[in-house]
Amino acid sequence: MTLPITVFHNPRCSNSRKVLALLSEAGIDPQVIDYLQVPFTREQLTQLLADMGLSARELLRSKEALYASLELGQSDLSEQTLIALMVEHPVLVNRPIVVTPLGTRLCRPPESVRALLPPVSGGKPQAAHRA
Image (tube, rainbow, N blue to C red; front, side, top):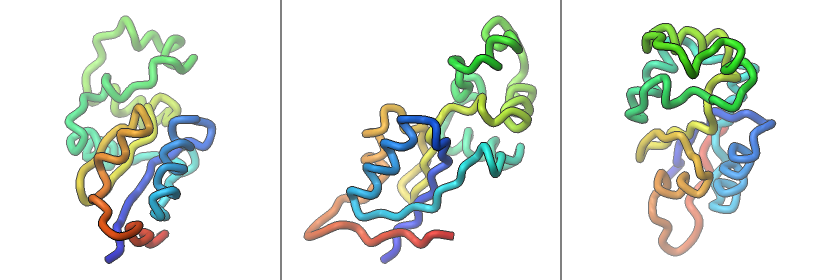
């Protein structure tokens, strides 16, 4: 059985790299999407937020300089406006986001990815197909 896993990844993010290392240790080769190179669509980001049960504000990366320059911390912007800003500026999206058949989650801390993996009995899970 192939376990389809997608990781929305930022290669500069240590948490994102740690999630990939944990998946590799588990014998899983996920589909990796560098969302800075292949940005989210509005529909895709809206669906990911719904699947994670998060608001757009909860997914914003407040440590980015752009967050401060856009004054997003003091703003009362709507959910749709925040989503539009994250689509336009994907660096504002917190990471990594991991999608598996068991759920979708923002994997911070990286070890939280383990909750999205099926229990392993008698060996490692089979690798996922890389699209």
